[in-house]
Image (cartoon, rainbow, N blue to C red; front, top):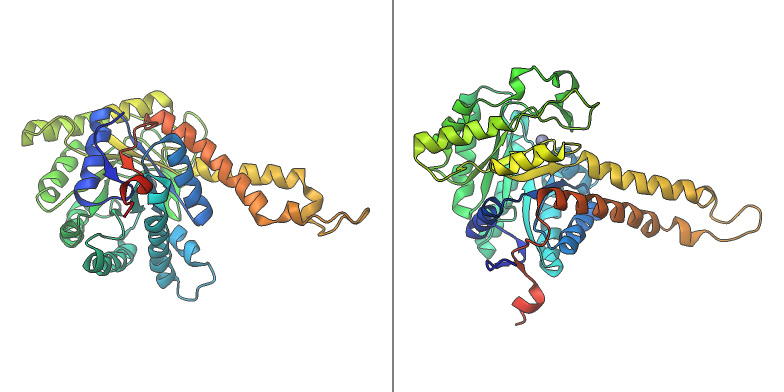
Length: 366
Ligand SMILES: [Zn+2]
């Protein structure tokens, strides 16, 4: 049991920092799950509640667009409104699940800076009304640009976000593989130096950003998006340790001063995950494995009830199949399978039973 207690719901400001501090001091990390609709969001909240684990919910720009509806005419608007709609859904419901949620958006490269800025505007509006931002944090991934541009843009956005208690995730070094059209599959070789972040760059980010506000760092240590053949990927979490030590020594900080993020967590070896947490990782992204879990269960259901997906009524004996093709039936299979995959993630990351949240029912009775 943990003595620190936070209000259930989306965290920001001091509550966000408390959550991170408890993760790092307690030697565990939170799953950060990519979602694309209410089915995946609800499955994530269900898994968090079931495991008594706090959780990170995130949307890519493509996921946000899908959330608003792939048929929306203006795709930029859809990317903004989809993310805002998802955050409002979580803001309304998370307290009833009794969990703390870090509400976050994923990779935004140079072209997507306006996307992040538009979402910040929504938080500013919400902050003016409620004293809280709509999102806990956003990611700005300018790792493909030079570090001057990366850090200057990160500083510019963080200046706007910090007064609302929002945090910025940045990336130094390249996460291999492809995600949502960002990155590529040809750079996943274990000997590609771009896949390993330089400690000097981490120090520079710390020096330039920490005076402005809170930031987190996706450092590359050989991790890739997606799941590839074994042997193609070589994780070296000791890279993270070198970065932490360099900042510790030059800035005279506490142990593990950097709040690190592990991208491309799907399919990683369990011992490498443990090491990464030991070196200050508080967030591990998971997308590919939860996508597959959802799809696999739906696929099984469709195979099992093939006839109900081809005929409303059995062509031979007239049996009605409404109960079988009702989307709630097969979407629920997907949700439950996603929950089961997240049980495993919470276990791997050591977050089971560690939630700091106080349920709404006991907390805000008035
Ligand atoms: Zn990523």
